[in-house]
Length: 113
Image (cartoon, rainbow, N blue to C red):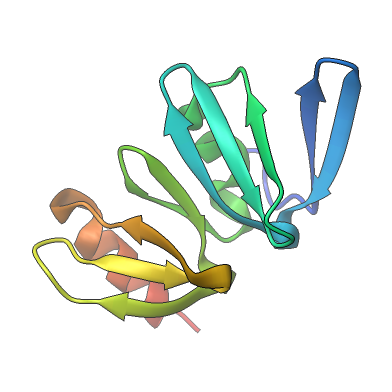
């Protein structure tokens, strides 16, 4: 399913729905059948949805699945560190591993204007 570019993400919580600007999301991390969303203000929101659900929603909005556990916002990438797959340093000094399988796709996305 292609959702197109979205500006705000609706996240179900125990008491309703929170809305977050996609630009405030640094990355999403898989945690079993849950996903933890890390925001620019260091807020963490855990949601009862799989990471693939967020990947499907956000892939057209500047996000890239770089690892089994990480979906990152490309606009928050500050540095790429070479290695087997390597890793990235994101806004707020967050780190996300890049899997060997995803490395080429990730580097190609960084080269796009």
